[in-house]
Image 1 (cartoon, one colour):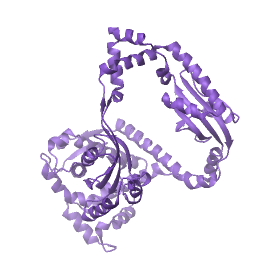
Image 2: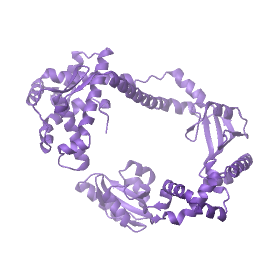
Image 3: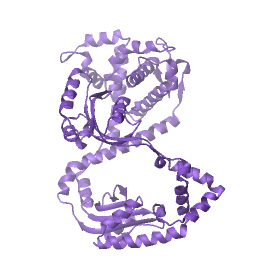
Image 4: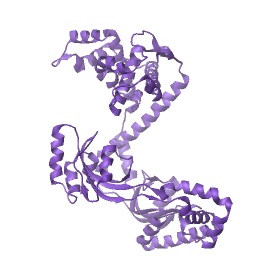
Length: 495
């Protein structure tokens, strides 16, 4: 759920009319909440959180949970068990902290700004014109006077100004040029990364060593712990590999559309039809592919059909909360469960391999030498095969630029990047340490074609995203600091 601090004008304004009308209905299904008390439920550094504010925010959360669960109402106990009341109160406290900070920082809102904002709201318009009588009557019928509503609008405008300050992004032309300069310095590399423990399964263990390990009662606990650590390997649930076509909506139009698709779709053309017709954005790119999944990953209605279907079979339309689906089951895996007794020899072998430090060190050194030779000779097939065998990483013809300094989504240390960019083409650079083989071959150096054009089109968006992440962190730290200093007094009798 969205943090109340980050909510935009819709929190106070766009949902305002709806909430004050709906509140009387929402509270009818749970007991113990007074809607008439004029006391404040809390104060934050002297700024009140009124009963009405609290009840409106609480009703909004209750409605959200009712929509998510399909329920008709929530009891007092459910509110307490789910922590909804405290969550709402925390959000309101954060809002007040931000507003107080805005005041302390000198953020002001003029009456003209407030009036212009109110006049722009569609609730108070007849046609395209603001109707002052409609405005006053609607507020009066819901227990508000204009000055109270204007305060809400003013506070929300202050919050918006704070958001604008956090999210403001300035990208100068000189900055773009500098980024292009560094991004244009590129090395194309190939490489492999394998850990010491990844090589452990290749260490030879005799049957006699395994027997001695199992016969030793002191190893019983270690075997049980290793089994638990690898439980997903020995306790695999039934899985299904499927595709789907989604038609959103639950009306007759959506049902007619999915029935028409069901009449023409087959296992052979399913992916092609999904790319054209599915209303799942991800499915358009991958032909509706959902990959492998086990029980509990999908909504119940979808899952029930998928696990009953035979391989290479398309379902009839299946209705879920997302709309109507057609499901193609491409493959199935039966559950595979092995108890501790059945895999004890394998577990013993794994444990012994990890303890053979000298053998593992020799294997690590020999493997590093072999991989260096293979990379130098361009024998990428053998490098890739070994990486797969020991759960390592293989980098096939990857570009690294001086600005990002990342290889396969992993950031290089400054010294590692420096070594790569200094190395001549054909050189294998060793970036590893005592416990890791990390070999990178510099294939070539050069510039990215048309980079300047591509970057000028996308750089501002990229920097904006980075700044938004930074802004989010700043907000979090600001709220944390304010919480530590603020004096918050709550009236628990009203919560």
